[in-house]
Figure 1 (cartoon, one colour):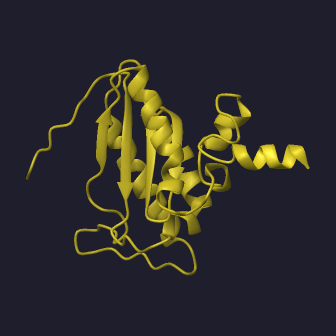
Figure 2 (figure 1 turned 30 degrees about the horizontal axis):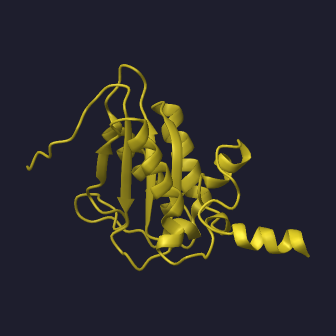
Length: 176
């Protein structure tokens, strides 16, 4: 078995990308309620914070901050993925199948991980997460994508609603 080198720093924040096997699928946004529940359950069973997240049709990006004495983000990802698969398999229109090893035909086996180094790196990854729907051409303004922590950041006053586009539209409306 290949052993991948991963950064393991207790209490750190990690940028993670999880991708579906079928890159043309919209499974994640189509089943965003089940995905949200799987994330909440995983975070209850293995506590962590998710400062930023974006859900796209075929992949998701998130920041995960671990407890002070814990460096195990992999088990949290495994728990989240398996919980989501179980939720989908329980649906009447289930299309998730298991292979001979019991692996679902949903997620890519591996995931991308990056250890956040400092506040600047953290801010850059929050921006990357929030602008991703715009980058992929899913919306014309970040605020128009519903599956993002961007809206939580706006509610908390961390970001303006017209961040990364839309300011000119707000000015036009104000002048009407």
